[in-house]
Amino acid sequence: MNDFQLQFRQKIHIPSIHIQINKMEARIESTVEKLSSDMDSMKGKLLQALTFAQDHESKYLQLFKDFEHATAKYNSAKSSKQSSKLIRLNVGGRHFDVSPDNITHPRARCMLTALLHPRWRCLVPKDRHDRVFLDLNPEWVEPILDALRDCVLDENQTLSNALQLVVPANGSAAEGFYEVCKMFEMSVQRKAVDMMGSSLSIWEDPVLKAIMVPLQENHQ
Image (tube, rainbow, N blue to C red):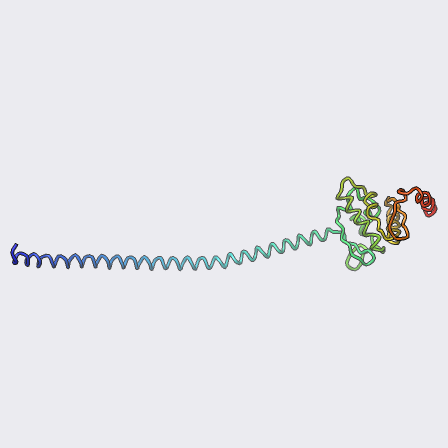
């Protein structure tokens, strides 16, 4: 191939290269424009989704706050309802809250539980806070309330046995305890009290039994 032919081919080839380059540039520009348009569209959708999420987040937060408030209100009402079911006592200025189960259970039947039964409670004196008022020493009554609870919780326990287990060790408190049991017609085995203040069963020692039984009979 001579020089003339080579130059001729180069002259023909150069414009074709420019045409191809122009086409490629046009395609690139079209692709870039399309990508830019797609990016703008995606950006708009993302902003829209973000706005939607923010709006719903505030709604969900409000719903969650409303749910928490409703739950707290329900728990408060439930606690208040349960509290209102308790039998509230004022024993010599000391307050006690007693479960209704300890009053209505068959194993806990006695004059005290009959007195505190809802049917008759309206006839019992109340303090200014609507607590049932018993003008008794709380040290004498608290063991009785413990015995009522214990005999209700333990199906093998009787009220008499439960009372026997809670007799106060202090001599004066034990005497008051026995008097309250007698007043409310509760059956409990009486114990003798030694000089140190501890209680001894009169049935545990034959000598004490021989001495104490006649004294109890005379006292009664």
